[in-house]
Amino acid sequence: QQQVKQSPQSLIVQKGGISIINCAYENTAFDYFPWYQQFPGKGPALLIAIRPDVSEKKEGRFTISFNKSAKQFSLHIMDSQPGDSATYFCAASREGNQFYFGTGTSLTVIP
Amino acid sequence: GAGVSQSPRYKVAKRGQDVALRCDPISGHVSLFWYQQALGQGPEFLTYFQNEAQLDKSGLPSDRFFAERPEGSVSTLKIQRTQQEDSAVYLCASTQGRGAGNTIYFGEGSWLTVV
Image (tube, rainbow over all chains, first blue to last red; front, side, top):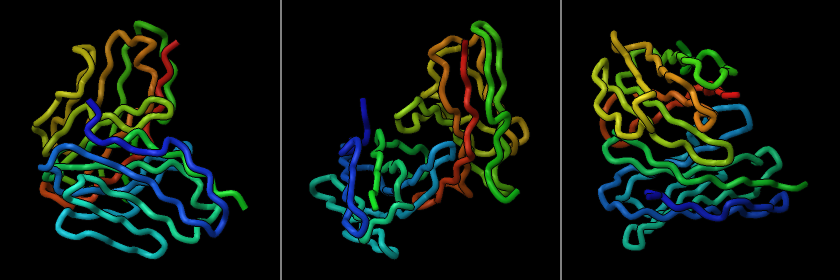
């Protein structure tokens, strides 16, 4: 049973465009929602994270939008760059005891 | 150390062979996780330690998988009698403590191929 569902599986965006990746969860006990970026041959690295008491968090070109009632959250990458090409994973956690990951989105930003 | 360190980075094992994968977490980090990542998939939870106590091992796929962290620092994931379906990247991660909002830091993984 997939605790966190992620879409799309792959995404191609023109340089300068907006990349949007969506995730949905079922367990309302989750209290921490991070996004990870993974380059080939590397471990996932934390990009940005949000708690359910806020609806949006922005760090540079990266924004998380969180909809608690719909149990959905999304990552927006503004002004996408070729260097952003990577696989992105959303995740959800309850009290930091276990992290459930989405299946990943492969992002390609074309020049 | 500066980050989570895993060894070996790459391991090729013959089917039936036992393997041991080592994880050295960030110094002082209380919580340690093991994840399995198949090609093109997200990390799947295997087990979780708080200090030396293994609090959750619900993700271990079979009794061939065993993890330990005897002194609350370095951890070893052991896979006995490896099978082809065990081929994956095994990721170790650590966090400073319990509680929501703790950033989880991943190592670069141990890539296991069973032939």
